[in-house]
Length: 488
Image (cartoon, rainbow, N blue to C red):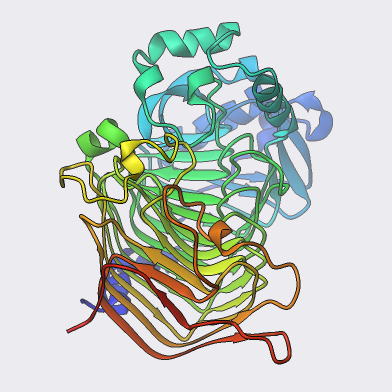
């Protein structure tokens, strides 16, 4: 296996070069365009005019000084730097009709969806920075989604939903991760940069997103540094940062506390993801703190284009349900390869390490052939996972199990290394080990050790599984099931 640190180092050279540059350009005074920043006025027109002027001038900085700037959707053009200064809040008005249909990618499928709150498409050399806050005011969006679910709705009903349904022909057969595609209530992200290059997001707070918080699609040369991603723990589908078919990214010193996965690495889903065929690759994640969330650093479940050459190092995972989480299943396709986690600390997690090729949510029932324990023919829809390395991990307070690595009988996990690591099972708050991975179709787990099934090329060295309970028996370090073979 090629060393991930070398690959990640090569992948972020452009980001480091970008970090060292300080482009010139004038400051654009938004008050000259009529912006108030008083928390009452609608500043949309003034902000749009200021951003357009900055682009027309070849790329200037638009600073937002302390105040509350209420706005509808905004776009950044090439060369524009939006600086939300400390004490300033860019507050997006939660009226759904303000966010018209735009071409986007939603849960892994190219389609039409509501306009992202802050959007850029096809732009180069853009930046969002400053120490202030962007507030998506997602409460109204979450309430509408919950109401639709509570009413048992399974199809578009509102005028906006029917408009999107007319644009998105065939949406009924497209894959969904549970966000509501069948309703065509395609909530927007707080920030989406689509097909952009030389992207910087630094030192801002991004809070209360209607859907995924920050979604970078088909982007290259990315630096995300010192950003605070925050959503309530019960806010539906509110991932922190999603890199979707992106390359050459450095994510460092960020703080995640969200309602779904903290940092997601994705590359499209289903037939559309295979058609696009663009991987997420050459990503480094360093020095981040990942708090409550379904997963800390998560690969998938949209993996059709592949995810490769990822290094996660020196990060803290605090009460995330899962630490490093790879989730896919038959029908997702794509290769997940060369993923490295080293020198990380995980505290009070459900399960520190999950490599799950039997991911259940959004899929058919366990009785479906998709979840058959028997080998199935290998085709383009068969996911492949290989080259996973965990070293120097210290995990305590594990409430379900120490780990879960379960491949498919026709496509085993290839090359799994767990080295120099310790796992400690929690004293209190224990749950069933079957809750470790959100899997479907597997037999019950035998214990709380590292569950292994359909793994080829396994290497485990200097690894312990203990219990916080005095005299407690954590069981076997490795819960080995069928289809497991050591590394040559």
